[in-house]
Image (tube, rainbow, N blue to C red; front, side, top):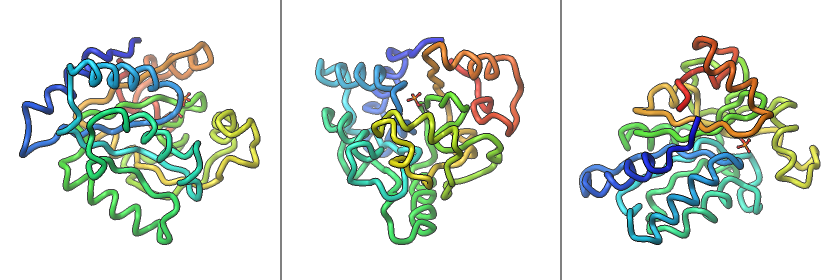
Length: 219
Ligand code: PGA
């Protein structure tokens, strides 16, 4: 299992060939896993090997109530991609501070639809098998929605918030598994011995809602 940044960079670079009518649309995740990939993409941009001018990004989840916090997914993505030439109007991140979360969900779904769906969905997997904040039992046809976080998701993410469970929001917005299934391609990144079981299940077991990581082929 590798993080094929070369392939990803090639895909992003191909967006320049699409312009100006068609953007390359990326679904992006947070967490520690994709950081190496993001660094490679930023390096490629700095070396002038690729541009993000014709790239649209959709972030797949966000905590509710944490938007301006340094550990919000807003902050995470912006801290990474501000180093590129992506236009801020082409970056889409769910607003977990929206007054009306249902409306935020609907608007986000509509934006994905208008963009023509995600061509590449780049994702990690949580040790508890969540993808974005789709946890065990999430429906294969689920769409963007508000989710209560399960204790194992909170436990996995507490390390970003001083290891303090009380600081981890208990509610989040997340795209659904349906968005993953609809994506043109899915790049799944798995690193670390603690994810060995998740990887085993992804490779050995079939598609079912008892493990969101199983919904696509890992690369
Ligand atoms: P991690 O998170 O990369 O920090 O392990 C994975 C995820 O939650 O998708």
